[in-house]
Image (cartoon, rainbow, N blue to C red):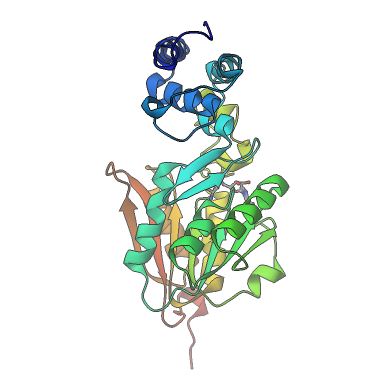
Length: 302
Ligand SMILES: C[S@@+](CC[C@H](N)C(=O)[O-])C[C@H]1O[C@@H](n2cnc3c(N)ncnc32)[C@H](O)[C@@H]1O
């Protein structure tokens, strides 16, 4: 593309060519991605119509970005950031990219919490999206995030520090093991979690997901994908104060299984499933019983 054409004409040509190429690569919304790549190549966050000059090397940079997206590298990884509620989070290769549907967990937390929300735990933190949002939206809250992966734990620490300096802490640990430092955090007011939950036979098709999200972030373990979610439920029963709530994301077919797991584990008195904005069952909402219930063979007898 000639560097001598007026800016408006160069942008129009770039938008049309990039949209066409991304459409041919199979993207669902090629013009949205094209606009984002053009803005990134131009080094601006302003609307494209407001640009009156383009940096030297704009065309070469746009070509590099377009080729990456044609190869189905996620847009967020190319841009190095992902929007999540009010925040713009840093993202990094090898770490799960936060999804818009997870944003709803914060609304559910507000809706179902009673009492103060001073201490919140985020289990399976990834980039730290949920914990960072708590710090951003609840200025008095402190957050403890737990994440197994070293790169993700480092990224979560950075995102937490930006969202609420000095109020967030990250533990790099495996929830399937004993974690004395996590146990010592009890009692907490709420647990948020978007754990891995996909069963082994439900492999995602999109190249952005299966080739770029780490498999440990996708597949939850066990035949039903619920091994890590079970650990989240068990940790929540241990950590929550009486009346504290767990909000845990799961797949749309896992509502009954998640409620059953929490019910069988014991320690919760209110269990429900909340839908996402498209009406699909996506979140377990569980309230820690005010007094630990006695059940089955554990019932006291005199
Ligand atoms: C679906 S991703 C969600 C990340 C983040 N909560 C979000 O919503 O963007 C699940 C995360 O759980 C972590 N994870 C998987 N198994 C774990 C385990 N046993 N203990 C702690 N973290 C685990 C993965 O590394 C991954 O970062």
